[in-house]
Image 1 (tube, rainbow, N blue to C red):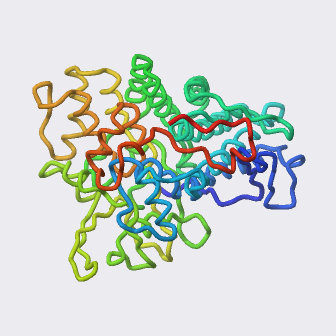
Image 2 (image 1 turned 180 degrees about the vertical axis):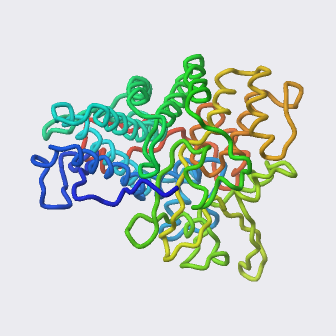
Image 3 (image 1 turned 60 degrees about the vertical axis):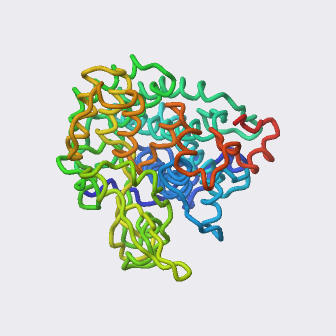
Amino acid sequence: MKKIIIILITLCITSACSEDFTELAPISNRNEADFFNTANDFVASLNASYAGLQEPGVYGRAYWTMFEMRSDNTDQGPDATGLARQFTEINAFTEDPLNEQVDIAWSGSYRVIANCNVILDRIDPIDIEASLKQRIIGEAIFLRSLMYYHLAVAFGNIPLQLTPFVPGDELVQVDANTIYGQLVTDLAIAEANLPVSYPASDVGRATKGAAATLLAKVLLTIGQDSDAETVLRRIINDYNYSLVANYADLWGASNENNVESIFEVQFISGGIGQGSAFTNDFSPSSDLQTGQGFGRNRPTATLENAYEVGDLRFEPSMGTEWINVDAEVVVQNYVRKYESDPPTENDSDVNFVVFRYADVLLMLAEALGESTESYGLINQVRTRAGLGPIDGTTPGSFEDKLLDERQLELAFENHRWPDLKRFGVVTEKLLEAESDVIEAGDIRNLFFIPQRELDINPNFNQNDN
């Protein structure tokens, strides 16, 4: 089914934690004061928040750089010029607070947050049908929470802004646990406000399942496993998701928004400014018909070797090509989950899958800890992959086995860096996979706050990594 239409609308409130935080930047001549008067106004502004997820600073590029390439899943390879240099630095932990990818991740995320804050601030007195108002509030809270989750994982101590910024206000950093605590409160409200599903015309909007999945992820992050279990069982029992029978059928534009999908960032090709760049970014140059393939976000050899023989996830997830480099044939891995045939360069119809049901099953196993039930949940995922079951007698600790399964099942979907942090194995896994380019002393759990933010907000402290 295609797709929630998030065409850039006539008004988009943009901001960041800087001077831009104070700016309401209308695309049209309608100003903010006379805009928020009807349900259509609020839906239009909400659509602008969804469109913000497509931006290069969010899911369009920066997030996969910071949550996949930073991890042991992928690297940038030997490229170290132009845009590739920014990726190489992030991969090797040698970036500084001026790195553009980190900077646009901060500002892009806060733009979505600020737009949602305006919606939530203005909607209460407006006469809108009650169920629609409730849904708009739930969607805005979910989108804001999604951004705050990524910011907290990436940067740690950040500003928590829940109302529109007023010139003269001082932005105050709070610790990541304060952010997570706010998200627990907010996502419970969002889940209560949102529907289980939508008609085809609105496919792609946030649902109860999306809010609950993010809530469970936050609860696991802060060690509230029992509460996470309650939420995850609700998703499984009440929200009508199931595993797609064939792993390969999760990927490609024709398979989007399927029964396993919980939330996807919708991209639409066709020259309207909403296509994704994933196909061009990830495909090797020799494997692409339209435009240039840059071969970015390359799967590491360690990830390649982690797949068991016969794992049906391998081929749909990654490929290998042999290329000539200085008269020598070398192997180059590449991501396949986002393959397509875009009509023009960087204009693919392929969505980015943020949450899906397999992640819910594996998170419930994590919340439960080692048990017969938790192995059963893991084995649901393994069975689809064509692999035999595991149990307590299988070599390795339960945590190691679960983390390995999450890596293979969810590769290239932006879960690996948060997983490494949550399981407490960042240094161990990075040195295992990339000791040739990463020095142990350089490895940090947090990204630097962009220098621009430190310059604008002298009360900010650089995070303790």
